[in-house]
Length: 284
Image (cartoon, rainbow, N blue to C red; front, side):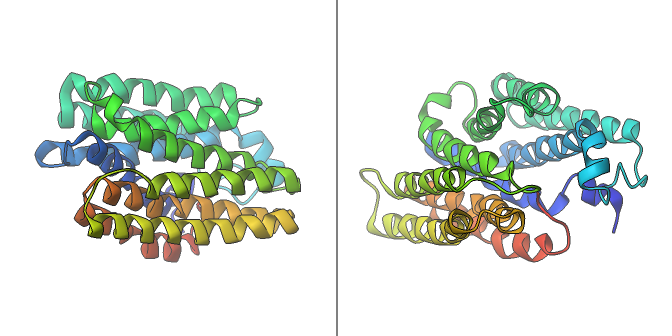
């Protein structure tokens, strides 16, 4: 396995492509022309965060996860840091190409939030909130700075989901408490309801949103409920992986509810591929 693929959890980036789609749909700014580079910017920021995560956790991983690229010696710490910095730069460049200064007003804070999370906030009680902010900003990137206010609902929904998944993921090595797993399950329930709700829209759009939201709720909620009952490390890891993959149907539901059913369908196509590749490269 290519160590760089493992370093950035490459297949897991399929779970961020729909962030900007949901944001753009809410803002009424479809991803066309140069704006199609925004999902690629999201991928660059995501991969940057994964590489930076392993750089920051290299000493801890030497004890808990020695198979990862840095502690196993397949990638040096300095090289991993360079990959993270280069990918952050690529994300900013892609954002500028897609939307100029308007996009950079969101992309720059997003890059800063990613670095702040991995280098400062990850080992503090604010870690889940910081990760939720990163995801919310990624959704707003699809709307752009001037139209960001129109995408606050999908940003909050995906941010809330991320909050629960991140909080639960802290138990991937040593297990979690039933209360923490229950909190993640509660946030999943709220996110599913919020994604399918709202006024207006055609019957087909509402039906598509409801179907995607239901698929999200069942696929993620089932795993999280298992963690409530048996919050051991393997069960928590499975719930975390399901939460990461669950971003896809949640994004599809949000896009469909705003009238972008075709875009939602394209987003949903990423899910089976993400799950298949996730068996080869862990998304966590």
